[in-house]
Length: 427
Image (cartoon, rainbow, N blue to C red; front, side, top):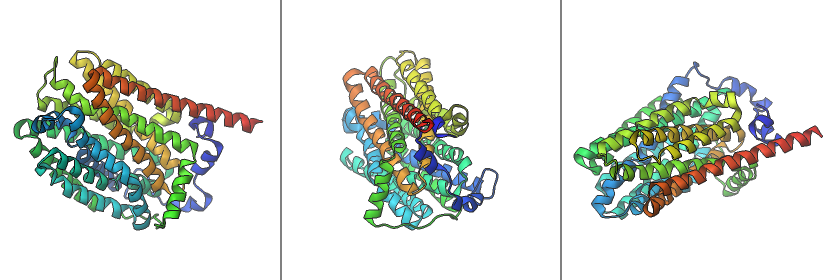
């Protein structure tokens, strides 16, 4: 794909190609249908399931948590924001550890700690303790996203990278969906504490299967933990205009998603819907749409180009936000379907573009994306809940629409930059 078709500058386009010295290594990387690819895909899929199930285990339960501790939605939302904020803060240090000690080692350790904390969460005696435990859990999970993307960039052939990352993102969507559905029905019968305990037990199984299935890395080269080298790599990534745009796009998409799914439980338990907790949990089955849209992101980019895919994802998300304003349950559900499809497609496109663009310090490049992505989740959770408290569901929708406008604006700026580069080279 040429720089003109991707929105990248000529420099970025050159950096994204595989150097000649890496050709032999690229030939031995995994590819769909090849040795180890299926095991690798299943392992990272399960890691994605565990990550999102743990990270958002309290999101569908916020009305129950509000009731037990006697707090408003904006306060209960910190059980989500603390987890995503902890992940955002620690993802860069964790990525540095993965450069030194290996992707598989860091991912295994991260899952082990997160699962252990997850088994303690049901026993939190107060909202404050619950928020602290969730922050620790998020910090532990920080070793997963960036390390997984770096592992894929090193072990999978470039042409199959978007599809491979799409499968990992699809695991995220399944984890987010199953976690919310399971917690909804379990909490309806036995309360939110038992519900998050069940998620912890499921995550234990995913973590064990992940470690047994994931093939040993064959193309990893240990890096340095020296702060000067790490800061230099981060500075180089932040100096890349394409990467900066992709980071901002990931954060804005997640602002929409975090706000909508943090608040939707409060909306559906109130008038005119007044749905029980189990039914509200089942509504998260719309995450299956995200599984499909994320796993097909590679074909979407092949047909429309990166910018076209982002425009489509943003437009789909905006249409879903507007539909969700209707006081009719089927239209609200259709709106959630569109929001979910747009979000996961946009996230898969942007995150895979980061992995393809960065040829050095891939873990740091992915870590910066994940940091911005989860900062967007924390902002969306808190701002969306605050807007809901102030203006109802329409306030949350307004926050989401502003974020979508930001995605479209940044993508347009990328198009303008690409055209200027083409004109300059033509002259």
